[in-house]
Image 1 (cartoon, one colour):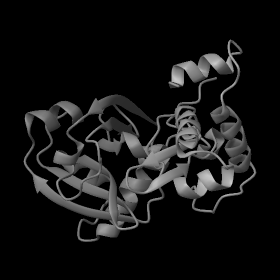
Image 2: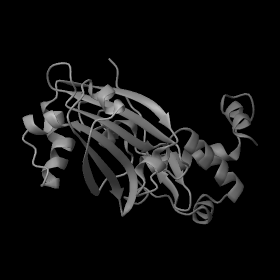
Image 3: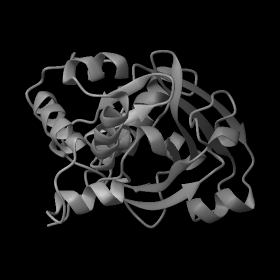
Image 4: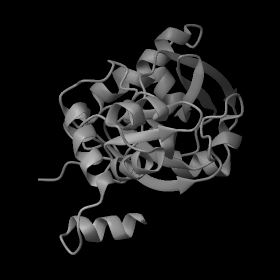
Amino acid sequence: MTLEEIREAIKGSKKLPKCVAVYDKLFKLIKDGEFDEAGKLPTEPELAKIMEVSRMTLRQALALLQEDGVIKNYHGKGNFITQPQNRYGKGLETLKHPVYSALDLAVDEVEIEFRIEPPTDYTTKVLGRKSPVVVFVDRWYKSKGEGVAYTLSFIPIETITEEKIDLSDKNALLKFLEETSYQKARHSTININFSVAGNFTSMKYTIAKNSKSWLLEEKVFTKGDFPLVHHKHYLPMENSHICIERK
């Protein structure tokens, strides 16, 4: 039975298939917090035994749970619970670093490198002015040793001077980009695009297993017409979500 046929049955046009009952049981177990704190479901053989159903029936139920966004399958790792939408708190409408707002995995390390380059036509365009020099900052976001997101930032030298950023202190630079700039910001703009160049751009780490990433291009403003910094955030689609709360 296909997912479409199962959906039709759920609507009441046919007798409900067994996988729907399994779906309901699994949904309740997930809702009641019966699985481990890491949110990983038991293996398929274990679940099939627990539910007393065939592997095929179980897979149909899991497919429905995946379709409804209740769980997510990571190739080679298994099925993991996707937390309720309200666990994200605020989405991209909140003025803070979008990687932390949109990434589904917990970041436990940020690797940072930078270089100072002359301006290019591109940096002049995105920064709105021809800065004498531009600081290019690479940041790799890691979870349990694996790269899971990447940000490339362009900082005009005027920002470095005005904000008194000590480039000899990488931690200070990181804090400015991750926290201080957002605390000082009056607003930011984000353009959301689709990218297949995330792995190529991040170079050091393969952040997207299927090569598909969200590309969030962000300008952060404090005052005037020129952005404080311009970011290109790459988030793999399999490990991130885009949520914007509208009122």
